Image 1 (cartoon, rainbow, N blue to C red):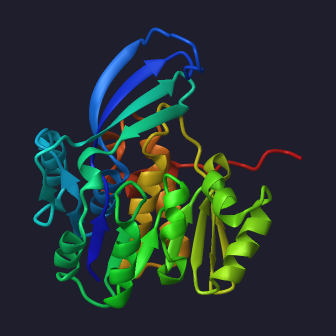
Image 2 (cartoon, one colour):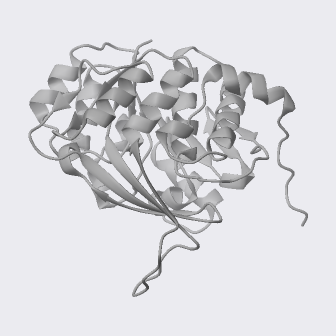
Length: 304
C-alpha cells in the first residue's frame, strides 16, 4: 500500500514565553528559533520515521529550501512537490514554559493547489493506497472527491477545524483522526460521547480516532471501541504531538498492523516528541520508539 501525504509546508517561527500572550498584552520572549513545520510536512516526516515509504505533495515558495531539504533528509519523496514563485507558508508559534502553544498561520504557497495539480499527483496512485490529509491547504473538497473516485483510502486530520471543512464530503472519508476541540465542532455537542454518536450516525462507515491528550486516545471502528492510555513524559513542547501520533498511525495502517499495536506505538512516539523542542525536529525514529517502549509507563487515570 502506497502512502501519499498531501498537505502543508510551513516555516515555523517559535517564540518561548512565560505564558501565552493575551489580547492587548505585550510580553518579552526568552527564546526564538526557526524550524520546518506545517501539519503536512510534520505528518509526512512522522510516517517516514515510522518506517513507511512516503510521497509528499503540496507547495513551497522561493524561500522553501529549508522545507525541501528537511523532507528529503528525513526520507520523504518530494518528486511530486510543487514550487511556486511566491512565499512559503509560515507559522508564528508561542510556546509557554508550561508547554502549551498558540499558533497563527500565513498560508502562502499552501493556498496554490489547483485541480490540474491534484489530478497529476493522484495519477501516480491506485485503489487501496492511503491518502493522508489535513486542513491547511486549499481545494480540499476537490482533492477528497477525486481521491475517492480513484478508490484511495482517505485519512483526514481536520485541523484546523474551520468552516472550510463543511465543503468536504465526509462520506468519502475512511478514517478521521481528531482531538477534543475538533470533535466538538464537528459533532455539535459539548459531550464527547454524544459527538461520537452523532458522527457515527451520519457516517456509519467512518472509523473515528479521538486523541485525548493526557488521557490517551480511543478508536471507534467496526462497532468496537479500543482505548490506549497516554505514556508518562516530561512536557517541553506539545507542537508536534498530534502530527507525530497521526503520522505513526498512518504508517501502521500501510503495514496492516493491528489497531491496538498501532495506537500503542503512535502514543509512545507522541510522548517522546513532546519531551523535545520544535515540530519536525522532535519526531523520533521507529527504532528509538521501540527501544524506549519497554521502559515507558502508561499514565494512570486521575482518582475520582
